[in-house]
Length: 416
Ligand SMILES: Cc1ncc(COP(=O)(O)O)c(C=O)c1O
Ligand SMILES: [Zn+2]
Image 1 (cartoon, rainbow, N blue to C red):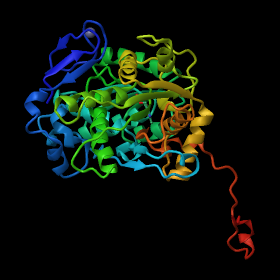
Image 2: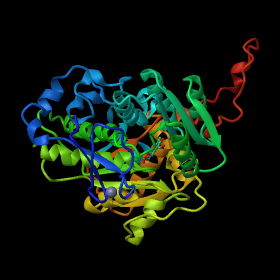
Image 3: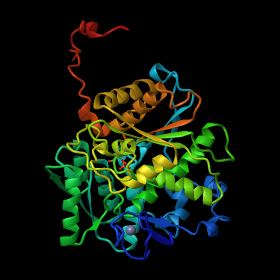
């Protein structure tokens, strides 16, 4: 259970036992802290390894609960780290891994953050949650709210992937489509929270989604060691490539590395953290390249990778800090490239990735081409969700329809 909540910008400490959103002084995100010294003896990698089940609540000591049984859980986390087969365009990569988040409940990594946030909100008596969403966060919120017996109010851009809208409606969420971007949805949520008393679950405006997402960082240390055949130590990769919108996962993983060091689990070495964004919505890439501390609103943001269509992020300075402290970088890919990335992951790795995952793979290819990624380096790509939510981007075209009563119908078969 956390014992502090401090502002990531000004450091102001906030009470831990009441609902919190942004810092009451400077309106920046709050970050949870734990008494890690006191946990050193009883919370060890071996204790975690011996636990039954693979859910992210294996790490409950560094989550907002007094015990794992307090969690509102649908079995999130514990996703596979797949080594990429050296085939096709992947052949040149000796040690490329895919952390495949598509198997989470509601098919994306958003499940981790929502499980933690709804768990904490439930403890503090919340009955109604609200959030703006690019799609997957809405789906996750709808189902965790349903699991917790809460009402859920969702505000999504009109052109959000149909799968996300439908799954949310099926779960009984109140869904509102907005003729604007996620930032416009966020403004409506803020007003609604003021008028109707909902609790605001927006990315980083709520302190515990980051706690859920940080479990990806804890898991990586176990996964990478196991992939190297080392079952008694922990090991981080050399590089992590993350498709960033609001950046919760990136910031969360960086926090996890810091906590693991303070727990005595790992040393001071860190992966280089890479942010990939879409060419037509790249506020963080632009700010990183300009050497700025904060990012400016990205005008006319547009990309088919709905999760990356975030023109302004409240945690911009936190993402930029991670990139610089880790010696990482930030780069863009075009929509054409990221869709091609999805096809390549499907055909050569057997994974139907979301467009955001396709973007991570294409970023790895670009970084390798310029020598920024070295062939032997352990690199982890994040596939943050399932391609099944984005079927609308891959219409199959005119497929042959066979008349099974016609003996000659197999003439349409292509022999390769
Ligand atoms: C599939 C997918 N990938 C990546 C992101 C971006 O995640 P974050 O807000 O943690 O940067 C999202 C957010 O909507 C998403 O749905
Ligand atoms: Zn502050």
